Amino acid sequence: MAKKKTSKKTTKKKTSKKVPVIKLGKKTVKRIVDKKRDAATVKKIETLTSSIVKKSLAQKEPTFEIPTRSVSNMKYNKKKRILEMGSNTQTRSLFNLGQSRKFMQSLLLAKGCKDLIAAEKTLSLRGMYYMGLHTIPGTKEKTFNDQGESDGILEDLEVSLDGLREELHIFAKKRGTMVGNITVVDNGDEINCRKMGSGGYAIPSICEPNVMQFKNCDADFILHVEKDTVWGRFNEDRFWETHNCILTEGSGQPPRGVRRMLHRMHKELKLPVYCLLDCDPWGHYIYSVIKQGSINLAFESERMAIPDAKFMGIRSKDYDRLDLSDDVKIELNDRDITRAKQIAAYPWFEGKREWQREIKMMLNNGFKMEVESLITKDISYVTEEYVPQRLKEGDFLD
Picture 1 (cartoon, rainbow, N blue to C red):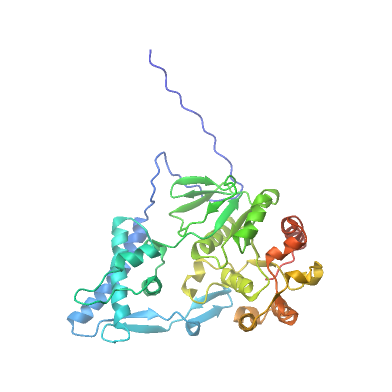
Picture 2: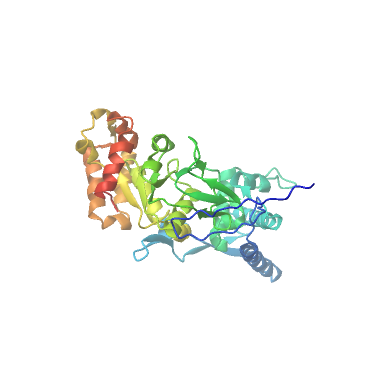
């Protein structure tokens, strides 16, 4: 006698945050394709290349325009509190000996991106370098001398096409980790970031909504730390559990994937972002990039910058406030001093008295400090005393 088929009842978990629930169905695919976005990207590539063909057929010099990616073409939008790219452009020409190499490299990689989209596949920056690498027939000339050339051209293509690297189906090396009270759906796979062990969830390079969705988030805030060594202490002490948060790190200056993830969680889940960074010009710059955006990538600030992010520390006054020993002092070198003065002159820091006092105190002290210096107080001082006290007092720089 055949056994009756029984179906297990499933209960839907309630989500604390009002986030859109993505119905993935019974079957999931490893690559979620956004055909509408892909079609728009292909159209942009074809428009760029068609204009070059038309100029050639009309016996005109083949050229195309690229927005200038430099400080001179960057402006700070006070209303939005982010960096934006200006309207200046530069012409890239085939018949200009100084530009012809980059001109041909641009078209070579544009074709590679179009092929990737057609194949519904993605490729790493390193992979794109090798995809376009070959020796030009009849010469000893290679299309690229190194990956740096290829990476720069891909950034040029992004701004020229008014598209994103992710839209060109290109990703970078993973760098950054996350753990905490949230579940993510990554390419159809559900990942509970509460159960990621000591290693955590490796934040991918592509964190767009068509690839990654959020669910079951009951965290109250995001704590972003500068380095994985500090992140490891917070994770081992289960800080994210006792303080109901999401804990992230970017291995120094966070790559685009980490910044995009932070931006999306802040905007879509309404989670405040607190940054625990070193007391040095580089920690200050990392905060600036998270908060206002990157000068070199100002065209992406709208989807990455978090103007409301707060700087938690470590602070110049902590040396006296916490009665730290001389052992934690790291003498400022000439490069540190120059960089600190540059940061103090940034338009988004220039008018903020607290930041001017912070940078001036660091320069007057003549030394910098790392978050790890708090270990001299106690192994878990940073997780059990320092951060909880800053959160309780609301002691942040904005």
